Every structure is written in structure tokens, then in C-alpha cells.
Length: 106
Image (cartoon, rainbow, N blue to C red; front, side, top):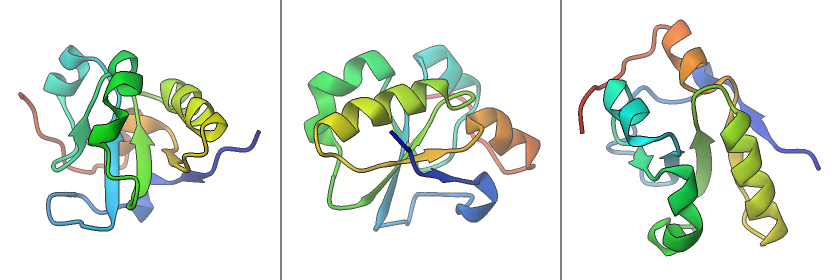
């Protein structure tokens, strides 16, 4: 199955005011606290199935993790359930390598 991908350079630096896209960060709490995209929705991968109703599926769903592995797993799971989403290619490693801003803490 082909999972659509998007490069970090095609994304805004801050998702706080973005209303038509959701950046879902599925990393663990400690990864999130060490650096994340401002305005992203944090939901650790293992929590997503039980919390999927917290995600506005009317928006374009972008999924980010550390390097894309977990994002591909989640998007494969979503595809089997008829939920569309896009993988942020390279994850937070690519985000930081591109010099894009991050926030730390909760």
C-alpha cells in the first residue's frame, strides 16, 4: 500500500492558527517534551486507537514521529479503516535538519 508523504519544507513552521490541517505527533511523551512543532496535536502511537475521536478527520491529517516508521504504521492502520492521512517524510529528524523551529516542554 502506498502512503502519501510530504516534505517538511512544504509545511508551516507553526500549526497554531492552521484550521484545515492537523499535525498529529505520535511520539512518546519524553520525545514530545524534548522538541515538537508548535500547534501540533500530541497523541502517543499506542493511545491513538482509543482516542481517534479526538482527531478532527474533516481536516487534512499529517502524521509525524521521529523518522517516519511509526507514522507509516499508523497510516497503514488508518487506511484499513478508511481514514486518509499523509506521512511527514523524515519526521522530526528531518524537521530539525531543515532548521525549522521547535518548542520544548509540555
